[in-house]
Amino acid sequence: MQSVFGKYRSPSIWWPEDKREHLLNAAAGSYGITGAAATFLKALFVPTDIDGCKLWLRSDLGVTKDAVVDTVSKWADQSLSGNDAVQSIEGNKPLWVDNQLVTHPAIRFNGTSSYMLADGVISSFPLSTTPWSFFLVLKRNRNTDERVLTSSVTSVNRPIYQYAVWDGNCAVRYNSGAVGISQTFADTGTAYHYYVGVFGGSTVNVSKDGTVQLDDASFAPGAFDAPLENFRIGVLEYSSPGNFAGLAGVDLVEVAFYAANISIANRAKLISYAQTRYGL
Image (cartoon, rainbow, N blue to C red; front, side):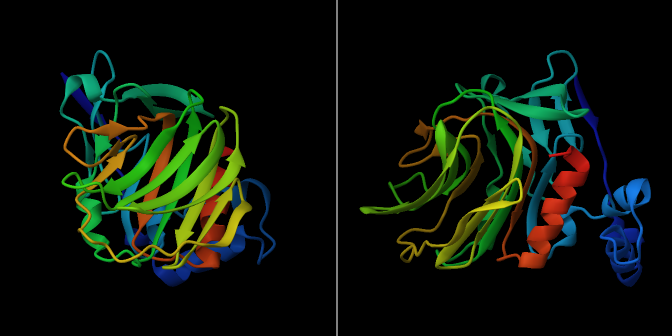
């Protein structure tokens, strides 16, 4: 048997945008509102309020899992883009685990076999210079080379985009044939953190827990010599179908991916959202 829980409608659907903006300003202190009221108003913001969101996954929403062993077959996209993350192979399903961050559950990728597919995302990225951004809330459950978000081709060994974490470092990487570029920053430990990454076409910015780690770092991939074919969560699949690298040992609480270079103001909203919701 399987169970499905968590259905969500963005507040922007039912609250007029101008009223929402006033409330968000109030939550930020523009009208002197503080404490519990400000916390409530900040919580009205969700990642899909930022334009260009193509994928939004949250561990308490839209999870289809086995009712007995809690393995996850579907993690429904809450962005209304229909880019659900799925896994039909029993041995490759991640695990839903309760009460991991504050009271929030997590989706656990074990680092040896579990990953998910969300291939609908790639249609938004026809060019190597197409801007993209991500928001992640996660912790490592081991310290090895983990590919958290990847997009690549399985017919040839190019091109590959990946956001990876491993013992001592995080990295944004691009490879195409003999060309490889990477930007990294030091990052250790197995505590929960949140990350905001932005690729603008030739530079990349990444912050961790609200602190900038990569600031307009040079990141200029060449033109794709083959179109992207897949989008994976928790693994890199490249060169040929079923050829895997970097299976991720991570507990994911939230993932958002955008076909946009999100603004500094919107990055600040994501940071405030993570701080308010998760206490990080």
